[in-house]
Amino acid sequence: MGAVWTPLLLSLKVAGWATVLNLFFGVAAAYGLSRWRSPLRDLIDSILTLPLVLPPTVLGYYLLVLFGKRGTFGAWLSGMGIELVFTWQGAVIASTIVAFPLVLKSARAAFENVDKQLENAARVLGVSEAGVFFRVSLPLAARGIAAGVLLAFARALGEFGATLMIAGNLPGRTQTLSVAIYEAVQAGDDSTATLLVVITSVTCVAVLLIAGRLMPGHTRRADLS
Amino acid sequence: MSVAVHIRKELRADDRTFRLSIDFVSDSDRIVLYGPSGAGKSLTLKAVAGLMTPDEGRITLNQRTLFDAAHGVNVRPQQRNVAYLFQDYALFPHLTVAQNIAFGLQRGCFNLRRPASHPSVARWLEAFGLEGTAASYPSQISGGQRQRVALARALVAQPDILLLDEPFSALDLSLRERMRHELSELQQQLRVPMLIITHDPADVEVLGDAVFEVRDGMISRP
Image (cartoon, rainbow over all chains, first blue to last red):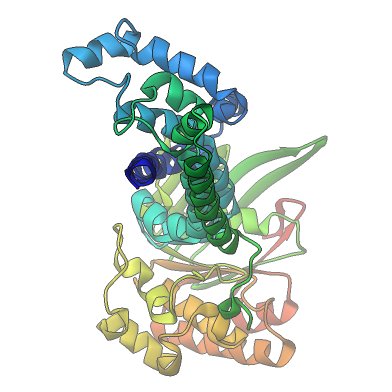
């Protein structure tokens, strides 16, 4: 059973960390973009959305160039004793970047849907800008953000290309679910592959079901008056 | 109280330009800006609250300068100590009636805990007969109650002036009359100065001591 549980737990750990990182960076970037009035805004948005459309192998290559032993940040991180290549932390970085646009898009739409009048009402009442964010904008955007975060979790759970390039395929250390499936198929181990495929599919369907319930437009019974 | 507003603002949308050029001075406690929609009344009110920045001019309230383009003064809305009653009330839909009223009592990142037991909140809940709805959400109460909650939320921090944007337009006719008199009595009781914008002649009659007519972005009758 270790052949199933080890990659499953590793995938959950990697996707969990990627989701936590995206919760902070994705929400911060989305709030910034939704409030920032500048012609550069669309350009920055496009660059941040790139991971959604670029082949994961291209992202993986970028990551190797940046974080590899001789890479720009890689050498510096190496000096501090942090290795990202062939480690699960590298897989976290890959999953975070690949799933980032999903949080960015949902959170930005959610923030833009928040009635500006409500934020202004809070300002006139004397509440600080940080208070406006934490007491008005964030709670009103929470459902949209949660939906995006769940999608990001599902995406991170299934990450393959970029992860394989930076973290490799070390069983027990960097071999996540999707990489394990690939290896099982290559090795002709159909029963393991089937089991892993079923587990991945069931997890993703569950996540999508919950995300769908959180999406705007899905009416809760409490909303009907 | 004394209010002095002298502001200019040019707004462009596509190929149309709208010029706002408002000048009025009053020491009345019941000022009404009266005029058709699109005349620039709301913009003027927003400028007083600090939600719109004029291109030039100045705004003073009780000799306190809130805005002065020539001297680079633009007090943030948070520091103006004005209260704003929005046309659709702008109640926070995710907060209860008591939390809404208590909102301005806590200015940091957290809502007041146990808001209904705060003395000021309790006083307003009682004054407006809202005790039974303290734990309800804005979507669960009536239009008249919503307006009372918005008024209580605006007044709880003891503002220097109450700005009202078409305060009764969201109410049906019979309720409108009652709330109008309620507001009139409340103003006399509290002696809180108010600046109302409206297109309804009945508001002018009941609430206007100093009336200015606004047309095409300008005061047409001093």
